[in-house]
Every structure is written in structure tokens, then in C-alpha cells.
Image 1 (cartoon, one colour):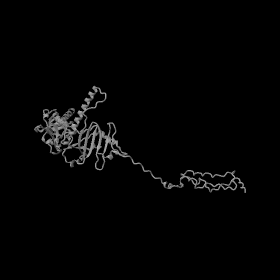
Image 2 (image 1 turned 180 degrees about the horizontal axis):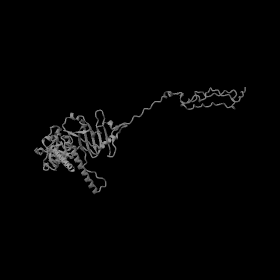
Image 3 (image 1 turned 30 degrees about the vertical axis):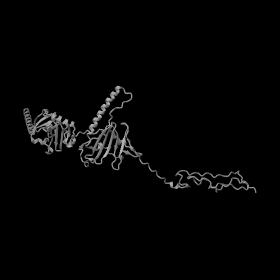
Image 4 (image 1 turned 180 degrees about the vertical axis):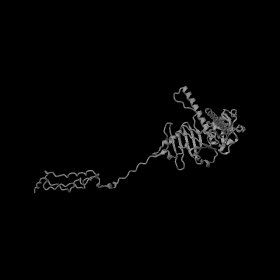
Length: 462
């Protein structure tokens, strides 16, 4: 019984092994290859490459040397990013093959290594030429490796590469070529103006909207608004971003591009002055694609030729500072030369790079809050006039009423003079006018009859 079980298990194992083998043969009939590390392009004459053409279903870009400088042909010969071209050529030269696959042409679409123009199954074609235009190598970059379709490469991180000069051979490489795109703007040299420490900014007016100017005496000083109107102050949360103003660009147009395409016939002008003597004149035109504006730049600089010596400088200090000054001036001159080459081109600058200088005066200046208007008292009309009358409701509610002053009584000892006429009290016309809030019962009336004396007064003598 045990022997039969052993035979059964061995037979089952053999059947499973045969089934797995058949399945693998069927699945891999067009994927024959070996797992080994190769460098198929190690002998590529990279120093002879002077033109690279990149094609895909998205477009074409041509990179070539012009007068010793790599340029983008589709952008009127604007300088190309040499570091990206160098990295591309080096990655091909040093390309390492993880697996060398034998693939039938029926599988090319699956790996996206068909030539451009074949739809979604097309790859990215690289054509390398020498100075005379002679082809050096053509490669087609397929899809990235990995995924359910590619069980042979599920754990790989790379890309399929096809060399049309080698029939039915496809390389699974460890290089992704993720930055290779057939779009001209992707290969432009993106170095732009770098104003550095800015001393003053002047934004011109647009139509009826007034411009503005801000300055600062030192890099650590706060910005100040020039020609400020009474009550105007800067919104420092907005204006402080000018201290690190360094715009970038996404694309470029030739200098002869019509103004009706760029809106630069009547541009907004922005002038920048820096602490190291550079001056930038920006002309900002119309709105470009993807939230941008078209911009022209002009660069100049006022660089001192000599350094002013400080008092009591020793010869050693003078020599050291003169050398530092000369080195700094050489750097500034190199920067000036590079930035002046930007003149004449029209740049597509994203709005976030121009955010502050695009703001109108009302958006960078704060005005004082208006003073509140005093409310008129409802009782003002009752107190108007030269002889205001007492207000009946002058006594607050709940307060005790004022007690009238007591009427003076005549003294009992006083005796009237014979035949004397009683003394008359002052007439109300000569007495002082009563106060506004005085109660009429407070003052004694001249007509008031005095109370009867406690004892009878003697009759006057005849």
C-alpha cells in the first residue's frame, strides 16, 4: 500500500513537470533568450555624434551642433540643454542589457517597439548622426519593463530597447530613459536671468491704472514705496517676494515673431536695478498657453573698473581685496555676457514667476481705513437756540428728583423802619439766566409770600 502511494506521488509529480514545461514553451516560444549582462553599444563612436533626432507619435525634435553649440532646430536654433544631451549619449554608450531576448516581429507591438506612426504600440525612435549627416545608430525605445504581460521581467526596472540592425533581437535594459521626450521645449537650455539682490523695482502704468516703485537702501532693509500718497503703505506680505525674484521660462519664440501673436506691441514694462549694478528691462506682453505671459528682456550693467581703497589698508590687505574684486568683476562680466544673449528672444514665462510684478498698485498698497462717521444725538434739536429751555426728562429714570432749596425766612428780630418802603427783590430780568438743566422750582420767585413770623411784629410808629 505504501509502495503504491509512492508510485502515485511520483507519477503526479512527473505529470505536473511535463505540463509546466509545455506551458513555458508555449508562452515563451517568441521570447527565447539568456539572462546575461551585455554592453552592445560600448564601441559606439560617441565623440562623432553631432546630431540627434528624436521621434514619437507626439512630434519630432532635432538637436544638433551649430558653431560648436548644441541647439534645438525646431526653436530657431535656441541653445539646447547640453547636460541632457550628454547624459542621453552616455546612457546609450554605457547601456547594460539585463536579458537578451529573441522576439518575433509579431510581438513588437506588445513591447511598443514599432516605429513611430503605428499608433499606441509605437516606441520612441533615436537617430544618431555624425557631422556629415551620416547615420551612426538607430534605436527604438519600447515600454518600461515589468507588469503582468512580461512575466520574464516582473521584478525588473528598465526598458525594452530594439536595435533594427540586429534582426529579431530585443534588449531588456536596466535604463528607463524616462526623460526622453520628442518635444522641443523639453530640450531647451532653461538658464534665464538671475537678478540676485534687487535694489529697486519700477512697474509701469497700464492705461488709467497707475504704476508703482519700491526701493530699499540695503539688502536687509525693508522695502519702501516711492512717491507714496498720504496714508499709503506697502503690503509687505506681497512685496517681500521681490527680494528673491528669479523668473523661469517654459518655451521660447524667435525674435521675429509677430507682435499680434505675443501681445508685445503695447507691453507692460518692469525695470529692475540690483546692488551689483545690473539693470533689467522686462516687457510683458499677452497671455500665453498654460497660465503664462510672453516676455522680452534687455540686460545692461554699470560695473566699476577699479576698487576704492579703504582707509589705512595695509599692502597685504590691499592686494588680497584687489584680487577678490577682480575675481568678482570677472564673474559679473561673464554673467552679463550670458544674459545679454537672451535679448531678442520672446520667452513664455509662467505666471507664478511674475506674480508680484503683475500686480496693480491697488494690490501692493494698503490704504488707511476710513474714520467712522459720528452719529448725531437725538436730543440736539431740543437744546438749540440762544435760550435753551430746561429738558423735562433731564433727570435719569429711577434717580431721585432734586429737592428745591428752602425759601429764606425773614429774621424775627428785624424791625422795619418807620415809613420805610419794603425792599424789593431783584427783578428776574437782571438775575442770571437759569442753567439748561436747572429745575424751575429751585430759584425763589420775587412774588413769593414769606411765611408768617413766629411772633407778631410791632406796628410801625405813626
